[in-house]
Every structure is written in structure tokens, then in C-alpha cells.
Length: 143
Image (cartoon, rainbow, N blue to C red):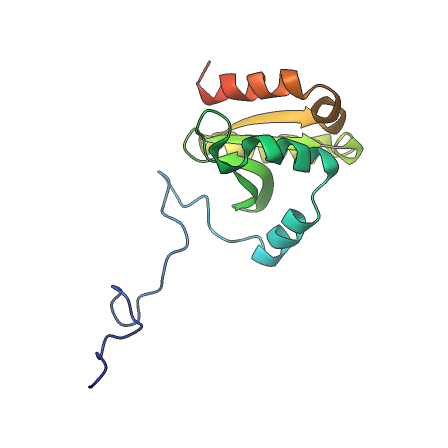
């Protein structure tokens, strides 16, 4: 029996590369200008607050919305993202207070591309998660 000449090629044409992400509107905001290995390292080395929030958002646990964590978006890596609702969630520690100008630039870049950005402090997530989750749900539903 002779193997198919197309074996292992899937449905792509010769020379065509597999796309990791579909495009979202104008420009491909998901282009990989930030290292994937950096994103993987950040997923592995999450803060305690990020882990706690992720436990409640993963696997469509919050009203069926799908979240990804430590996602490269253009030149940035965001903590959590829901593409369906175009929502980005950042969980900030004390180091972010010192970098407010960079955070403002990052937020402006994301908002120009149609994302809404929610920011929570680590202590908010750790001590008051019951208030954080309804705020996220409200943002997901567009309120």
C-alpha cells in the first residue's frame, strides 16, 4: 500500500503556513511581536492573585466566557483576555504604581484596538474576590 502524497500536509497548500490565530478586525492584534516563551514563563510563574482569579475564570466558569491567560497582544503580554467580549484584565501588584506612564500607554494601545481594560490590585483579588467577579461579569455583558 502506497501512502498518500498529501500525508501530513492537512488542508494547506504547499508552502502555506499554519496560522496560529484568526484576524480580529483591523490589523492583526495577535501578532507575535512578544516572545511566546516569555508568555509561557509568565503562565508558569503567575502571582498568587492571578492564580486565584484564573481559578474562577478558566474553563468558561464565568457565565460561559472563554478567557486566556498571559496572552501576547501586539507588543504587550496581558494577564487575562476574553476575545469574545474584547476584554482585557490586568492584575497589578505594587510595581505597577511606579510604572503608571507605561501602563497608560499600554491601556491606550489596547483601547485603540477595541479592547476594554479592567485593572485590579492584587489585594483586591485576594481579599475581595466577591466584588471583583461581578465587576468582570458586568464588563463582559457590556454594562
